[in-house]
Amino acid sequence: MHFASFADVDAEALGSTLRFAVAGDGPPLLLLHGFPQTHMMWRGVAPRLAGRFKVHCADLPGQGQSGFAGNGEPEPYSKRHMARALVAAMATLGHVRFAAAGHDRGGRVAFRMALDHPDAVRSLAVCDVIPMLDALERADDRTLLSFWPWSLMSQPEPLPERLVRSCPEAVIDDSATQWGSPPDAFPADIRAAYADALRDPQRVHAVCEEFRAAARFDREHDRADRETGRTIDVPMLVLWDEDGALSRWYCDEGGPLEIWRKWAPRVEGEAVAGGHFSPRASPNRQRRACSTSSRRTNRRLAPAPLRKAAFQRIALFQEPSVPRCSGLHLRVFERLAKFHAPM
Image (cartoon, rainbow, N blue to C red; front, side):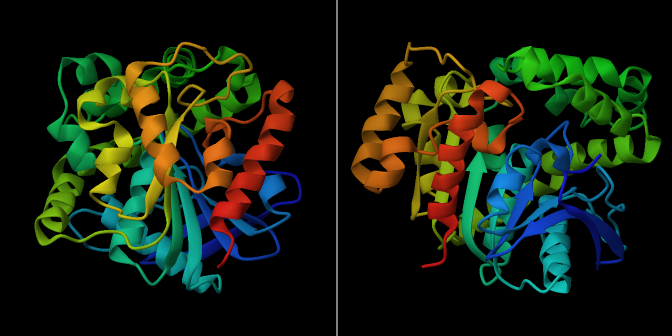
């Protein structure tokens, strides 16, 4: 599957071939998906963004239609290696400096990219995620009960690979219905496409290896950077679901924005209405205490245009196919364009 008007483009990087859906004209923008998705998660967002940017929707290494990672390194599916591969691929496509945005695990790849390749990333946006080290340090029974992929997918092979391949539809259905998003955020054809990607033994193995690398390598890479005081020195935007885990779990620390502020002094953002994957037509009016506190903090620190809308909805990084939200998406795209526009 691909977007209308987008071309499938392959780029060689670190001994692998990465697949991008590319369209548009303007400053380059790289979009990275999370689990259990592929670049198709951007199908409703990317065509609008292509009116202002040259948009590159990537399949992460080993996922979707991208080739498999590995060039003799011990951690080919670490965020560090994937970030390096994507930076090299973008350079091959003629973009040595670009804006990057990522959802979920793709957000952590974009985060690592901004840390390791500051000359390549001119602005950064992440959605519904915090750094791996911070997440694992705060993990408790809620994490285990809420995010089963973290514990299952990181187990030694072949157990998780065999379980996922035995019924990929169950994985997609659970994520589509149990992670705070309305079921219609995942149309049948998209569910089928995501399930098909999890039937391929090599691709399922690559997904599991990424989870294993997160627990083993990503955490240590983050720790080393924190100990040396490395931070991100480009503008950064963080959004998270106002009804999700990030809003509920980190209230005592000032919420996700305060966690990110330790890594990115120029960060701004806030909690917005929507599930992990999808905008809601009727967002819950009940604001949790952490969301309220975070909004007050953001109103002090964020620029007025962003403060007014804060991308309006988490839809920017989500499954944006629900027709009733098309007007909302337009406002979201305008905010993204303002945030990532060159100074």
